[in-house]
Image (cartoon, rainbow, N blue to C red; front, side, top):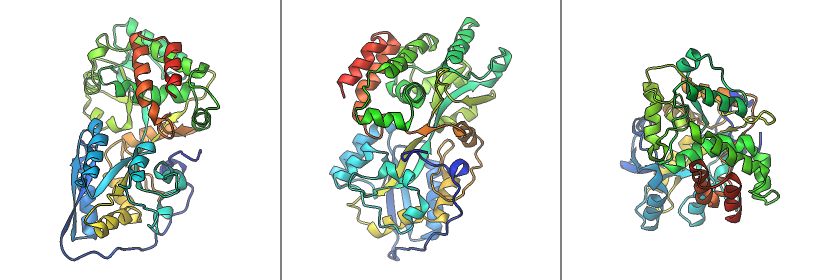
Length: 410
């Protein structure tokens, strides 16, 4: 495994059970309410369960969940941090987005936690490690990506799970010829086709995993080489298999169309597994396959961690929560409380009972995994690369033009 990859214990850890050192922050006997900021508006029930388990250990501390829409979170939390109205505990996105908040002095150094390195491997901590070597957040959860498919329709049409990109395109063509919409993904929410489809499957398969990614980060390879042109070509190739009204299909609408069996497949994240639990048909997940001469690589992405607002008026209590996350009891509580499709990342041997989580984890077996391509070092390319992907799918750019456009933004 590469240094930036997340390790999920149920598949990858060979470490023995670690006995966590006892470290407890003394807190006041007075009741304290900690505000917890997040972009996961769907997770109220799960997070309240986690907070109640913490409350059992610290009866004088109550944690209150506050969430805003994912697309608004970055701007919202920065505004609140600047005005000193931000929550006490903050969900932190990985790599550059989170590090920018730490560099601005808004997030606490978490390296002081004595059980931190026992609970989380260096690979797990790396997504929230600053250039100065300080670790500014406690890793909380990772997500995966895959192609959800209607197993009943595949069986009816005698279709096998495609093993190569070429077979995948042939599967799409067969479905289209039989009157189905092969892929539900739309273009109204540009991040969906970009993050889930392009970064979540196409780029690792056509460009490569961590070793190759680092070459682009260090400018040893150009972002308009043949591999990237091929990746944009792959997006052009799937355009004909999206809904006819793809321009107006939002992310939520795409998910509903899959559930309503108006499309056979959807490229999505593991975080949507619970949503598809309402579907009235049997569905499965497969890894978006690479071209026949390349290895399929899974995008298994370090998604969120938790840090303390340096301006909180309840530092001891907030530190108590972070400390608890590093204990065996805290790690067990996280594993038990995470929503479907989110994966705990501690080094403690914690089996997952959720069937959908295990479906995704099986995709990792025998394959390399990596974070989303631009997150570690190239997140400044988010907007131009997203626009390039959408324009290629719409036919407004050729794959070569798209690659040159993004390379020019480097």
